[in-house]
Image (cartoon, rainbow, N blue to C red):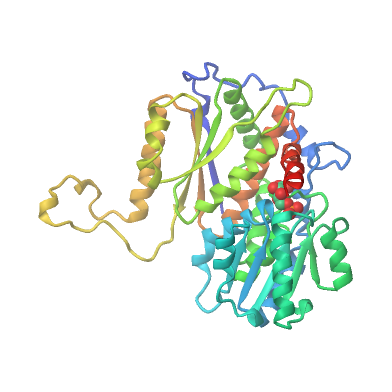
Amino acid sequence: MTLLKLDIETLFKRSEILDVAESPRKAQQISARFQEQTAQKDSPFFSGYRRQILSSEGLKESRQLADKLRASFDTLLVLGIGGSALGTRAILESLKHTIPAGQAKQIRIIDNLDPIFFARETAGLDWKKTAVAVISKSGGTIETMAQFAWVLKKFADEKLELKNHVVAITDPKSGVLRKWVAESKVQALEVPSDVGGRFSVFTPVGLLPLAFAGLSIEKLISGAQKQIKDQSGVTLKEIDRLAKRLCDYEDAGVTVHNLFLYSTVMRECGAWFVQLWGESLGKIHPQTKKSLGTFPITSVGATDQHSILQLLMEGRRESLVGFLKIRDWKSSDGFKMLDLPAAFGDGLSFAKGKSFEDILNGEAVATQQALEKCNRPVYSMELALLNEECIGAWMTFMMDLTSATGAVQGVNPYDQPGVEIGKKILKEIL
Ligand code: PA5
């Protein structure tokens, strides 16, 4: 089955922003370069996320441990931030409605030190029935460890065995969390050393909590694998072509990449995309010293048609929009446009009898076409269904697109040197 559809043809029409029909980078074999980067360990731009997805590394262990935890606990508290939380939340929020009643377990993801948020998320927990997943690739992230220290004290006060309640997910060798795991003998899973935070959603980082929640991590991985094997409906060649074109637009002055999601339940996929795109591509070019990267933002349709659309239509010509919609909502609720009282007249009669999802998808197409009419750069993505396989394929597609765009720009999409300065200043301040 085709899981994903990508339509990028409108980006290749001449526009007011970009007056060339095809990429000047046409001759460059970016996908070859990108594949090499993700396959050769000695490349400075190496990431193992494709290797890890293909080998299903971490899948079996995550399933076994999640099933064990499901047998004893009602709630899983996830302590993690950035790549250790955003992918999990994106998938959970998108798919939790698909978990059959009676199989769903509670997940609380705490990814900030906001004390009110922390109090709210830990309030009313029955600690005897609560497990904790402390997730940190580096093992030393201040926000996560501050929360973890609080939880450790809580378990000590409640006289509960850490070995039963705590799972640590961290680098297999390095970091203080790994050291503590060895000493305390708590259960632990690995984030492969060659997979960075924002590319780690299909490692135990995302797999353990999602399996605990009641989702099929096997289907998620199957969708991700289909994307890597060019079997999802979108090939690496097309990703390559899109990556080059996005960079052409960036060179021509586009500064904003807006992911316009036509689904409220997928809203959190926007936060995941913002981190993936921004932290990977906002870089100084190693040779030219030019600052690169388009600002990732996210909009939700149809809601934000009543918010940001005016700016997209008539504001500065600096944004490019990627639409994402769901082809078949498989909605059995039967919500549709029913008759309004006569006083409303027939102004909305064009939608009479149409299902909510038909109106929503129609709005996605209409908004895209309206932007095209105004010569604004747009492309579109479509998930066949809102399920584990399609989400697995789409997230892998986005990671590949990010990697390929980094390869086109000549920057390393897998590091984040710019975030270190603030950490040093914080140490001085505290
Ligand atoms: O993508 C990244 O590497 C970062 O955003 C990390 O996910 C984030 O900083 C959290 O790091 P850690 O998992 O080491 O606690």
